[in-house]
Image 1 (spheres, rainbow, N blue to C red):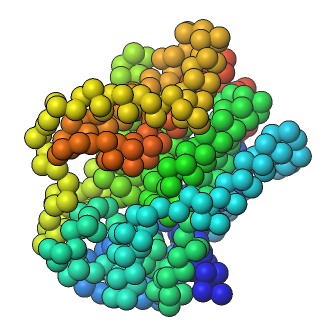
Image 2: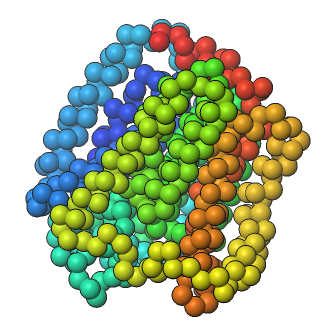
Image 3: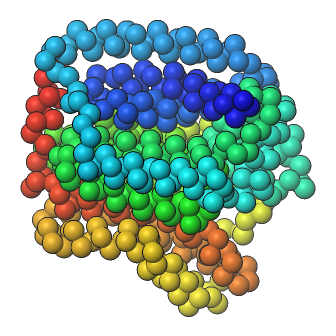
Length: 457
């Protein structure tokens, strides 16, 4: 019963807060599952920002405050739905869901992942080491426990880490009056499944159903397997992957002659990534840089303004967390990490060998090689479309290499434990980028979906 209340507390307010985004007219061509997933993802970000601000001004978390915000979100959603119906022709409806081989593949992958996460095969030690510890204290204090984060003997809790995941867990535990540890790991599976639903729906609009199915099945199977084998259950990695994948798939499915009307969704997703993990800011910067490079290659107009719009919410979100830490005397750097720019080149051979060994094994190797083979077969003419994804994938690998150069002493254990998790966004970006490059038709959108999009605009 406690687990059910916990999940309702995490899922319910989040979906309601994200509902105004999900019913936005520009998303009406997406499936119901995709829009529900977007509502949950963006709503989790909104809920975390609200709870962080409440704690920052010294107020306790109170369900009634969130209820009021949810009522406002429902009111706004109702207005957007009425406006959307007013401009959407009656003939424009979603395609009915039909059972197919694609449905069977998704069901098999989802079932295997759910089994692994529910029965604890993928549970992470970090959940009980610091994510869950922080969340438990937040629940007991009915807010972010800044006093705890200031304690010198609590540096293993990474006090400077962005707050989204422990705040969500703390909110759920406070509502359920207990921390249901077994219910946390399945949230990782839910994040992966929600991401797959969004990715498929957005890719279908660009590539068509068959190509979208191939790319999404490969993405879902690879990332689910990697999450399980890297023991990422209960960590914040799945939420980071969700936000970054949504941002990337929006950006790489753009058409050169027609800038995407969903840049705002990518911008909000990047802000969510920055509020989830520290490396989210690195990935957001790489995505923005890759988008800038591609737009320059495409010779688009107002490139600087569009790039600034894309990264602005992430920058504001990062600044918000910095200001909260300054106001409550929380260290801006992580005291348990190595000093920045103090590099050691004594173990370069070890770093390269161990990382290369991880990259050529199992699901990781499939995630790199299968998309590359598809691009080679399809030809190189469409690679420019996916520059943001390639810059992100290669940039994250470069970031990991530089990070390991900071290690004090032998970095073997550090690499084995962290590298399979660090590369998850990189593999996601690689699969999405290569998928769009291999299956997009000469840079043209899917004509059926685009015609639907333009109707009633």
